[in-house]
Image (tube, rainbow, N blue to C red; front, top):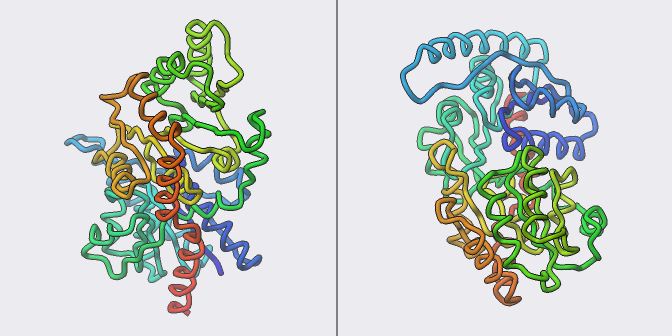
Length: 370
């Protein structure tokens, strides 16, 4: 099968597309891919590293207020549609999948105009602007959160698939995770992370929380600061604590996140959709601190989905400080029955076979085309 993948801007849009490609490769080694992304997006760096053929178009997103930039965006969209049609005619895909971000707009729209079956995947509980637009043209809309199918009332076909990124973490080795952190196997690990670049508010709370933790009480705390905040955060922690204790592990970035997640007992993090897919696939309870700086406040909507099912505690950034974070963590990690109950609730929400569900739908669409 020949598949065009498109998605960009952030890892949350890129990694689900890569997960689908890996699933298709495992099912059929002769699968052939082309990834169409943006010239400016993170995908232009990440996708070639995955050894997936990559081509780009020049496209930007709409501003949410009246601006001459939006006129330029419309012109780029039209040029992007024309360029996408040329790439699609040359590659001749059986199906096209878009996983979010404004680059999907011209790619999926062009495919629909050429009569190529299309699937768009929505990671968040509140749909993004591009996917709302594309839902009128796509053959299938796939959603990550059960019960959000109604967000696409004008669509031809909507299915609940979960997030394909969930499948990626299910085979990760917890032993390798412990080893990479220098922590004994079967230790209790609390992972505190603010996203790939870090989050200033979460790092500040990390620093404030450390003195409350005391000796760690047998729990290892892993602080992932993000590269931009690493040196300052580490220096402030040393100033507060005198030295870095053996229960505290301060890292700028984690390159083997699936393995580290596999050995984690509790996670404190933002509420990006791909990350939530990963932690629920593994059944990790969480303290979620949604970013307030995202479109439509969609991270809080994501987080509340887990909170309602008993899999997470939501702590809004406006209420975040070291003491509040410590109390939220301790309420879970300090009582095994609570942690276990939340872990079971998290696992119930996990869609471990998500990638396979998506690829089955892609095959169905491709077979209708042939």
